[in-house]
Length: 113
Image (tube, rainbow, N blue to C red; front, top):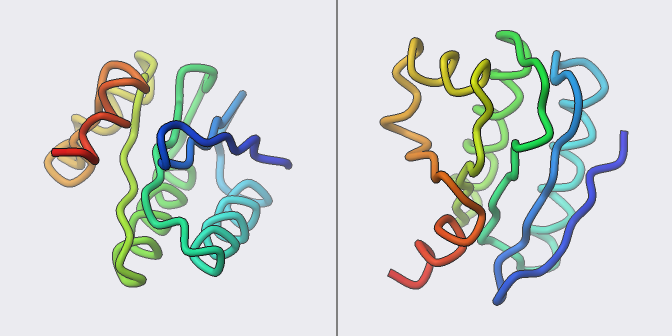
């Protein structure tokens, strides 16, 4: 799985797509985050607008990404949560950690605050 990465005002935007069920996706996200950290890119937004399904393993993948960024002096934010993903984040109370944003622009702008 490749994770498209783009730059928005100095913030890296990663776009996930399809069903996020852990497995190879987790390795791909982890590898990409470590590459970004090595490049000095420590402000990351994950766009979830194209995610159709996420299970607990997919959620674990996001938590792992959050931990990776935090432990390396970075920050990871979520944007554009779809219905299934939003419910999962709220039920698990992870919205208090991730502070999800309704749009990519809002998430990117939050780094300037």
